[in-house]
Amino acid sequence: MGEFRFIHAADLHLGSPFKGLRSMDPHIGELLSSATFSAFDNIINACLEQKVDFLLIAGDIFDAEDRGLKPQLYFREGLLRLSNSGIASFVVHGNHDPLSGWIADLGWSPMTKIFSEKIETVPFVRNGEILAHIQGQSHAKPKVTENLAKRFKHPQDSPFSIGLLHANVGTDTGHDPYAPCTLEDLRSAGLNYWALGHVHSKGVLQEKNPAIVFPGNPQGLHIREIGQRGVYLVHVVDTEIRNLEFLPMDIVRWEDLSGKRAIDFSSVETEDQAMNILEKKCEKLVSDSKPRHIIARLTLSGRTPFHRTLCRENLVSDLESFLREKFAQKKPFAWIDRINNRTFPPIDLEARKSGEDFIAELLKVMDALDTPDQKEEMLKQALSPLYESRAWLRSIPMPKGEDFLRMFEEARIVILNYLIDEETQ
Image (cartoon, rainbow, N blue to C red):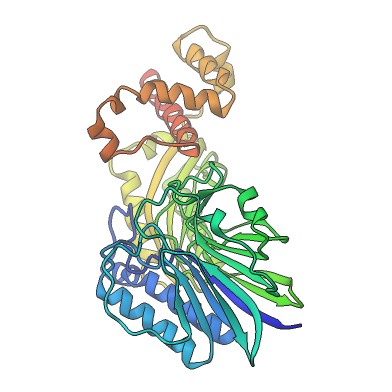
């Protein structure tokens, strides 16, 4: 029986701009504008270095229906490099780059297969032997609501079958429900490997029988897409998946130091101590991510005597500026997008909770909301008047899941800071 290897990628979003940045150094901005293209180069280089047999790309190659000529040319040239080395490529389109969008009239290598809006099955042949069948279907339009996974089925007498699909699995993915399906839909198709796209976070939903895999996007595009981004390298021996390995491909890595990762300022008393802690944190971020660049948001936490100083006008923005100037020119660079001050004055909140004033009552009410569902429901009620207008929904989408919890904690800190600051002035 045969042995082969392939790389599974998805959600390249070639040409996508980085989102949510407040400001940017010009030379860093130039690097970011090419980051998705550079991550794609990394994928092509990985295919060549690993000497894989083929590359799978599970949708959203481009960022929009009007995908532009440069991204299309760049994509074709990358796949041509693979073809010239005897490496095949199999591609489906997703909701961002459906077949209904503008497509340049370009010639493709015979070793590149781009699936149509109808399900197709093609063999992968090496030295005259069929080693696998790839079954795929592209999105015909931006909003596909049909369960496309139900069309997939293990081809008769196929030694190894792969489903290539851009789809939403289950209901709790944080992504739009395009081509929605369930795990049971995928399992019942009888395939050996599901090469999925759409969800930007990597995840192995099932390791075998069948393997169900999201590689995530190879380059994070905003602060919610933190940490490693890349592809999966899959090694198949005698129709069994021998190894499934994640390979980082990102050029710039996002880091959000909030929540449990927030920077503890409880022992800080002076500006010098503050800068020392922040510089060391930035140096560690750069060291841990090498050779990748870093864009970071830092959150300061803790009850600290330095709280009042941090609340001085322009002090936090001055800290941001200093760190940017120091780390923007390094290779790799670290760009501090913002610093959020979530510190408290050095007051014993537990003792305050036992009192009988307004702050004590507020602390008790907040602590009584001890489950995520309770906190989410409270915030929904508070925000619902805003969303009674359709104009608000179009411009600012209603938060979901973890967004509600983050907003709750931030609101709690802001309110308590304000009340305690007013009291201590």
